[in-house]
Structures are given as C-alpha cells and as structure tokens.
Amino acid sequence: MKYRTAVISTEFMENRVKEAILPFEERCTFTAFYYKQSSEIPEIYKSIEDKYDGFIVNGIISRALLRAACPDTKKPIETFHVDMLAYYQELFRLMTLTPDLKAERLYADFMMGKNIREAVENDTLNAEGDNFCNMVAHMSLEELKALRYKMVEDVRKKWEAGQIDQVITRLSTAAEDFKEMGIPCHFVYPGIPYMRDVVNRLLMTIEMDKMKESMPAVINITGDRGGQNRDELEELAMQTAILQFSKENDCDFMLQRHASVYEVYTSAGVVDRITEKYSVCMLKKYLERKTGARVCIGYGLGRDTTRARLEAMNANQESMMHPQGASYAIDENENLIGPLVTGSCMILSTTPSQKYAKMAKETGISALTLQKICTVAQKQEEGTVTAQLLADSLGVTVRAASKYLQKMVAADAAQVVGTKQRKTRGRPEQIIRIPD
Image (tube, rainbow, N blue to C red):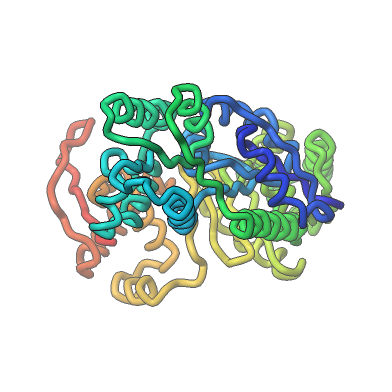
C-alpha cells in the first residue's frame, strides 16, 4: 500500500516539486495543495489532515505559521527550506553571468537591512540566515501572517529610494509581489538533492509511525463499587460495555477476563486514538457512565504482547493509587504517562536516573514520586510550588504533599524561599523552590 503525502505550496514551486518527487512515486502518492497567501495554510492543513499520512510545506515561514496555528498536529510534517549553500550558489551564478553587478546593490530579503557586500565582507551571511530562522521560530501567529508584507515593503522602499538594483528571495509569494512591482528578483530554489532528502526523511518517519501503530498494546481494566463484591451480572455489564465501546469507536479489541480483571489486546494505534495522544481517557468515561462502577485503567505498550501486558498491569497500579482513579499508560520506552486528564499529564521514566535514585535515597521518597514532584515544579514560574499546588497536581492530600516537600527540604533537595497566605484562615503556607 502506498503512503499518501500532501504538499502544501505555491504554484510557483510546482515544477520544482514534481522533479523532486519523481524517484518516490512508486512508494507514495503526492497531492499538491496551492495557496496564494501563507495565512491560508492552516485551513488547508485542517481540512485534509486525516486524509494523508504526512505533509510537506514550502519554507520555514509556512512551517512556523502552521505550527503556531495548529500546535497539536497529528501527522509528520517536513519543510522544503533553502540552506545557505543555495544562496551562495545563486550568488555565484549571478556574479558569473552578470559581472558588472555590484554586491552592495544586491539585497537578500531575509537580511532585513544589510546588503550582500556588507554580509560577505563581515562574514555574517550565515549568521544572518540563522538569525532570520530564529526570529521566525519565536514569532506569534499574527506576526508570521504579516511577515511577508513586512519583507516586501522593506524591499520596495529600498528600490524606490534607489538603494538596490536586484533582490534575492526564497519566499515564493514575495517573488510574485516583486514581479508585479517591476523589481528585478532572483528566486532561490532549494536544491533537488536536498528536496529528495526531505521527502525520504518524511517517508521514513511515516514508516516508523505505521510500525508503531501496529505495535502490541494491552489495556488492563478493573472496576469496583466502593469495596462491595461485584456479582456476575455486574461483571457481564462491564464486559458488554467494553465491547460496545469497541464497536462504537471502531476499535480492534480482543477481550479476555481473569476474575474481575479485563484485558484488552489491541494495537498502539488504537490506544493513541482513544486517548487522543495520551491526553484523556475516553474508555474510562464511557465505562463509568455505562456501569456506574469506579474504573481504573492502565495502558501498556511493548515490542511484544508479554511486555505490553506487564506494562498495562503496572500502569493500572498507578491508576488505582490515584485518588480519582485517573488512567495511566506505560509506553514501549518504559515511560509512565499520566494521569490521562486534560492539562495534567506528565511523562516520567520508570527507570530512575542516577539523579533521582540518589535523591530517593536521601529523602526516603520513591524515585517516581520525585520525578512527579520535580515535573510539577518545572512547569511553574521560577520552579516554586506550595503543598496545595502539589496536592492539586498529583491528586494527593495537602498533608501528603507537605510531607514530601518537608522531606526534600530536610535533605537539601529543595529550599523554602518564602510564604504565601492561604485563601482560608490559618498559617501561611511555605513556598518551596525545587532546583532543576
């Protein structure tokens, strides 16, 4: 089966793209989607995301704009960008074919101020390119949408002021603008070998994603009614609900029951989908609604079914320890992911690093719990937490969170840096800084 790739570009690049993809047409079908303005890219992507295995966009501005508008893209995306070698090659070609061309009258639009001679004499051409890429990477969505017009206006002013004779650009939409303005423009195409490297890299990523989708996964499900024994009818209701979920969500489930434990054998691709990339647990919500039981779920991935089953059992143990029974997953790299609740998910290694192993020995707190605490702190400004914040983040009592923090302070793994008045009456709570 051929992979499907969408190329989001301008018609200006059509022939170049066709030449670049020729060697790959037996492995992949390519479909082009053209835009007139870069602001159209996010909507194009959203409308076709589920229909293609991977995407290629034209240029770093387009890629940055797509990333800003769609931060949670589901598919691999590569970029046809131009490295500095392509600019040097174009400069060499121009100087050879136009010997009377003056470098100080030649302008590259990404430089936003300096001419080519200044950059070459000061050996800053590469730095200018890097600075531009860095600037684009940190722009807001609105700034990215306006960037093309800012660059075109910069060139237009220099042209009308008689400061430049020609411009070099990599922005295909800007090239059309310069043409309409009558400004001599040289478009720098990405090299064909480079473009083919990009396509090959995308296809390799797609292939790896497909392999991961088919990786064995096991879902370990347990349920209870607040300590009361479950009768056979309730067990049957749970089993029926699992199979109904499978049917309604088009999941390939093979269900096995061991006493009051349900094991679902499926694939990583299915788990990825029903957890929305490990951010929620659709299955838990469904089963609790259908059965009225408190359900704990652990997802396990592995390179074989035996490993996936073990990881699912371990993940379920984490779920049972969570006060709300939030679901957890352990992936093929032995990372613990969870709780699977929107905005609360953490990714932690179940194999403690030397740092956490040492800290665990000094504090008497498990390495996994320390990772959770440090991850919460890293998300906060200046790495500070309070017992209340930690309790809310980890789903534990304030008393338990306070004990953790005091043990870390006593072991010099954290420092008290201030106090904060509680919302309710009582003593102020300590503000604790946890170093990275």
